[in-house]
Every structure is written in C-alpha cells, then in structure tokens.
Length: 144
Image 1 (cartoon, rainbow, N blue to C red):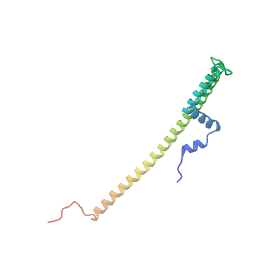
Image 2 (cartoon, rainbow, N blue to C red; image 1 turned 135 degrees about the horizontal axis):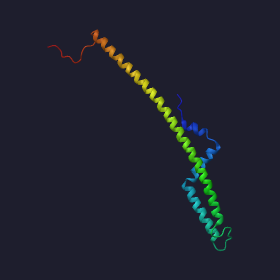
Image 3 (cartoon, rainbow, N blue to C red; image 1 turned 180 degrees about the vertical axis):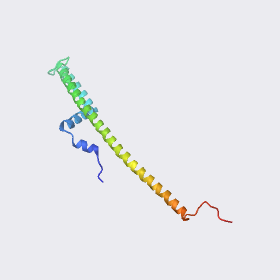
Image 4 (cartoon, rainbow, N blue to C red; image 1 turned 90 degrees about the vertical axis):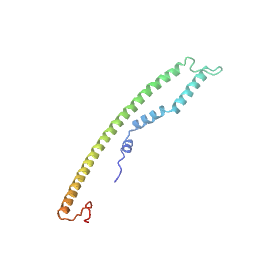
C-alpha cells in the first residue's frame, strides 16, 4: 500500500509565484539577509560620507531612504502573500487531519464491532462447552 504524503502533493502543485514568495520569505527572514543588509547600509553610509570619495547620495541619504521605502513596501506585500499561503496551508492541513480522524473513527468502530462479535462467539462457545460437559473446571478441588 502506497503511503499518502499530503505535504509532497501540495508542494508539487505550487505555482511559480507561490514558490518565489516562499523563497523570498525564507530569504528575508534569515540572519544572512539581516547581516548582509546591515553591511550594505554601513557601506552606503561610509562611501557617501567619506572624504575624497565621489558622493552620489550625500547625507541625509535621500536616495537610500527611497530605496528602503520601496524595499519595505515590497517586503510587506511579499510577507502578506506568504502569510496568506500559510493560512491556506494550515486550513488544508486541518481539513486533511479532520478527514483522517473521521476515517480512523470509522475503522475503530469497525474493529470494536468485530471485537464485540468475537466476545459473543466466545461466550457462546463457553456456554456450548459447559452444556456438553467438555470444560473441566480448573478451580475445583480434587476429591479426597
């Protein structure tokens, strides 16, 4: 019997946009991104305020502020897309769990019914054996 892997099925059916949103979310939510961004900001500030270097964005770094604003707007949208996807995944997983639980409940009820039938058969066999004297009591004391 093949094992049903819900996660693999969902991952295989992602669109390019969903895959890229996940990749960008994972990238922007990492320490590597934060550290790289801090280094970039420090280099920008240094290169635009150091003596003897051509300044393309003099203090107070208006161009840098523009880039940061655009980045924040894009990050917000990307994070909302990723959060929306996570909500959809959580809802689908909850539905899958519910369906699994319903199937398991039916199987357990079936097993309990079989168990009850077996107990009834055992009672009938014991009654039949007792009526025919086939069972000797193991609790009776030997005659002295």
